[in-house]
Image (cartoon, rainbow, N blue to C red):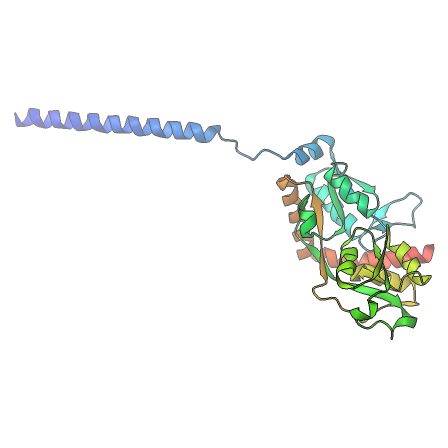
Length: 288
């Protein structure tokens, strides 16, 4: 009896174990099936699909903003070069596609991005809160201070922001500098033009009293024009960052741009490009 009872108990125990194993296997199989049904990679964004399908990255920029982007006058064909164009090429290389550059004025550039005429806008763009409402931005690169260019003859006249109150101030239209001038220079008459060189000419001809400009950019024009200088005027919280702009909802493309920005910040390329294209901009001016 004891032997039969023991055998019966063992059989029942084995039966229960088998049922448990079957149940667990069934659960595991279902879970595995569900897991295997999930996509291994996230679906590519519409922009990434477009770039890969066409085999090119269309970058919009606004030349006339050395050393970020300007036209190389040493070659016969019109070619936009500069810090931002180096960045654009590195992004295209990372994506494994060709680079196509479309040059336009700054105001048209932001509209072209939101309407999908260009894939990315790279033009020393400041990622303001207002712009973030309609487009996404990469991580920042090349922070620089906003300064005021004046005639050397006016050095004693313009030493603080208050000295510019009620004066005529030149800016590039639709830029951070225009917004800064409107906000910080009380009762000023703001003259906004499409390109920085046009505003520089207005200053040289006495049609504006000062020009609000990004420091890295302004330095080029001081080299070109020995009758101009940076004033002593300092704006509070006036350090500007640049970033690449992309249509909203394309996080995978944004991730690639951020990766490229980090790589070329860490390896010193941005610093090298700034020096290289500052010199090139001066050489361009000499060739005109």
